[in-house]
Length: 448
Image (cartoon, rainbow, N blue to C red; front, top):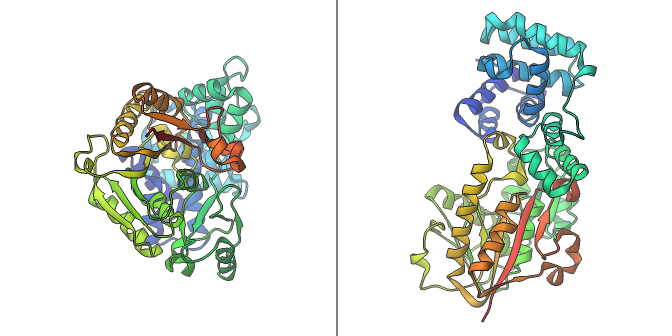
């Protein structure tokens, strides 16, 4: 049975709402097994991610023009209004009449009693689009950013506290835009320049990353898995901020490294590259499926020094107590607030209470990792979060309880990257400043 991109988008958004499924997995399944062809595939992706990114603003508009508030609408009606409004307000290439007509026709199948209501709301929003009102940006800045740039109000309040009004809005703007698509050259098999040339031969335009010497930003839309250069293990997908974790841990050939929260393997394999595939890396995570992802990536890239083991880092590492490591990477589970451009559905599922619970988990993992680091060894703690509670506060709490550890100032160790570091010598990247995901890392040394 054939489907339309709008119907497929509705079905995916409905599953995300009902099941908390992930957009990328559902989209990949539809694009692989569905019947959409050509431009319809691109429209499906645009609709799903666009609605998820702009959901807060779309609901703000619905509340202005609908006789019922979003909280009282049937789920199918609510989703149809979001889909229709997104096309009206954000997709210039779709004529207004086509956007309204297609949405109403879909409503006749999915919510027939509400098709007239949906038609009226969309047409009024189109007529009144110049009169859409937002909270006062001076007197209610958190509410303004939440409504205008589609973020949870609790999150915009934290950004305001951390960055001030001007920068908080710049960040909010950046977070509703698509993230860059970045890959990492596998320097065990090629150089970055050679990879770019190979990509050019495959019809792909790419530019070097600014901060990672191994990173390449892909500018041509592509299904990376179909490229021969990817299948041959010349590259792998990894954001530039994530690539910098291995660089700042700075492993040496022959060392023994632990990656405690390693799946899906991007950082483990990058560590192996930086070591010239010489030494040993123990990559740990929970569950066999996650470990298989690491093994598959290592095999594709031709890396032989990685072994995997199931480990729950939140519990005492009794299975590892007899082992000692020169360097440890703790890429802890976190809120993902630094990557909500990539996973926009996640920002609507989180709350401040979740951040507090995650910070407890992060502290537990960090303390457990510290027990098995060699004297004189180096530990890098990292999270893809912008929130202080998961970053600076975790490190300060750790240092207050672990007298054997000190912060190593990244400004002194990597002066060429100085603009990425805080006054404490921590790494903190911002999408609006640096063009990459929000990431935090602190490098700690265990005293001899």
